Length: 125
Image (cartoon, rainbow, N blue to C red):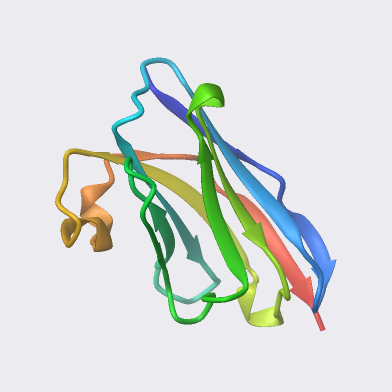
Protein backbone atom coordinates (compact mmCIF):
# COMPACT_ATOMS: atom_id res chain seq x y z
CA UNK A 1 0.00 0.00 0.00
CA UNK A 2 1.39 3.36 -1.02
CA UNK A 3 1.37 6.16 1.52
CA UNK A 4 2.28 9.81 1.13
CA UNK A 5 3.25 11.88 4.15
CA UNK A 6 3.70 15.64 4.15
CA UNK A 7 6.08 17.47 6.47
CA UNK A 8 7.56 20.92 6.90
CA UNK A 9 4.44 22.96 7.54
CA UNK A 10 4.06 25.51 10.29
CA UNK A 11 3.52 29.18 11.01
CA UNK A 12 5.53 32.03 9.55
CA UNK A 13 5.18 35.76 9.11
CA UNK A 14 4.44 37.29 5.76
CA UNK A 15 7.54 37.36 3.60
CA UNK A 16 8.94 34.24 5.20
CA UNK A 17 9.66 30.84 3.72
CA UNK A 18 8.73 27.23 4.31
CA UNK A 19 9.73 24.03 2.58
CA UNK A 20 7.16 21.30 2.36
CA UNK A 21 8.15 17.71 1.70
CA UNK A 22 6.09 14.74 0.61
CA UNK A 23 7.63 11.32 1.12
CA UNK A 24 6.22 8.15 -0.37
CA UNK A 25 6.39 4.70 1.13
CA UNK A 26 5.24 1.32 -0.09
CA UNK A 27 5.19 0.71 -3.82
CA UNK A 28 6.39 3.80 -5.64
CA UNK A 29 7.55 4.56 -9.12
CA UNK A 30 9.62 7.25 -10.78
CA UNK A 31 6.75 7.38 -13.30
CA UNK A 32 4.52 9.17 -10.82
CA UNK A 33 3.34 12.70 -11.52
CA UNK A 34 3.11 14.66 -8.29
CA UNK A 35 0.89 17.55 -7.41
CA UNK A 36 0.50 19.93 -4.49
CA UNK A 37 -2.96 21.17 -3.63
CA UNK A 38 -4.15 23.49 -0.90
CA UNK A 39 -7.44 24.24 0.76
CA UNK A 40 -8.19 27.28 2.84
CA UNK A 41 -11.20 27.38 5.19
CA UNK A 42 -14.37 27.98 3.23
CA UNK A 43 -12.58 27.70 -0.10
CA UNK A 44 -12.30 25.14 -2.85
CA UNK A 45 -9.31 22.85 -3.06
CA UNK A 46 -6.82 24.61 -5.31
CA UNK A 47 -4.06 23.16 -7.48
CA UNK A 48 -0.77 24.81 -6.55
CA UNK A 49 1.93 23.01 -8.51
CA UNK A 50 2.74 19.87 -10.48
CA UNK A 51 5.97 18.08 -11.26
CA UNK A 52 5.75 15.38 -13.88
CA UNK A 53 7.76 12.20 -14.07
CA UNK A 54 9.90 13.86 -16.75
CA UNK A 55 10.58 16.84 -14.50
CA UNK A 56 8.36 19.36 -16.22
CA UNK A 57 6.56 21.71 -13.87
CA UNK A 58 3.38 23.73 -13.58
CA UNK A 59 2.50 26.53 -11.18
CA UNK A 60 -0.72 28.29 -10.42
CA UNK A 61 -0.57 31.99 -11.27
CA UNK A 62 -0.99 32.87 -7.62
CA UNK A 63 2.31 31.21 -6.66
CA UNK A 64 4.37 31.58 -9.82
CA UNK A 65 7.75 33.13 -9.07
CA UNK A 66 7.45 32.41 -5.35
CA UNK A 67 7.10 28.62 -5.11
CA UNK A 68 9.41 25.98 -6.56
CA UNK A 69 8.59 22.30 -6.87
CA UNK A 70 11.28 19.64 -7.12
CA UNK A 71 11.65 15.91 -6.72
CA UNK A 72 14.28 13.51 -5.44
CA UNK A 73 13.42 10.13 -6.89
CA UNK A 74 16.17 8.39 -4.94
CA UNK A 75 14.41 9.44 -1.72
CA UNK A 76 10.85 9.12 -3.06
CA UNK A 77 10.33 12.72 -2.03
CA UNK A 78 8.81 15.82 -3.60
CA UNK A 79 9.51 19.28 -2.20
CA UNK A 80 7.64 22.55 -2.42
CA UNK A 81 9.84 25.52 -1.57
CA UNK A 82 7.61 28.44 -0.67
CA UNK A 83 9.17 31.90 -0.53
CA UNK A 84 7.72 35.37 -0.05
CA UNK A 85 4.73 33.85 1.69
CA UNK A 86 1.54 35.86 1.94
CA UNK A 87 -1.40 35.55 4.36
CA UNK A 88 -3.50 34.28 1.47
CA UNK A 89 -1.17 31.26 1.23
CA UNK A 90 -2.61 30.06 4.53
CA UNK A 91 -4.19 26.65 3.93
CA UNK A 92 -3.87 22.94 4.47
CA UNK A 93 -1.47 21.67 1.83
CA UNK A 94 -1.78 18.21 0.32
CA UNK A 95 0.51 16.23 -1.92
CA UNK A 96 -1.07 13.91 -4.44
CA UNK A 97 0.20 11.31 -6.89
CA UNK A 98 -0.97 10.34 -10.33
CA UNK A 99 0.13 7.63 -12.70
CA UNK A 100 -0.30 7.50 -16.45
CA UNK A 101 -2.49 10.54 -17.02
CA UNK A 102 -2.05 13.02 -19.82
CA UNK A 103 -0.59 16.45 -19.21
CA UNK A 104 -3.99 18.11 -19.53
CA UNK A 105 -5.61 15.60 -17.19
CA UNK A 106 -3.07 16.40 -14.48
CA UNK A 107 -4.80 19.75 -14.04
CA UNK A 108 -7.85 17.87 -12.76
CA UNK A 109 -8.16 16.82 -9.16
CA UNK A 110 -9.63 13.44 -10.09
CA UNK A 111 -6.39 12.50 -11.87
CA UNK A 112 -4.81 11.93 -8.47
CA UNK A 113 -5.89 8.72 -6.70
CA UNK A 114 -3.29 8.97 -3.94
CA UNK A 115 -3.25 11.75 -1.36
CA UNK A 116 -1.34 12.66 1.77
CA UNK A 117 -3.12 13.57 4.98
CA UNK A 118 -2.39 17.28 4.59
CA UNK A 119 -0.31 19.74 6.56
CA UNK A 120 -1.15 23.20 7.86
CA UNK A 121 0.62 26.30 6.63
CA UNK A 122 -0.25 29.55 8.40
CA UNK A 123 1.09 32.91 7.28
CA UNK A 124 0.47 35.87 9.55
CA UNK A 125 0.54 39.49 8.48
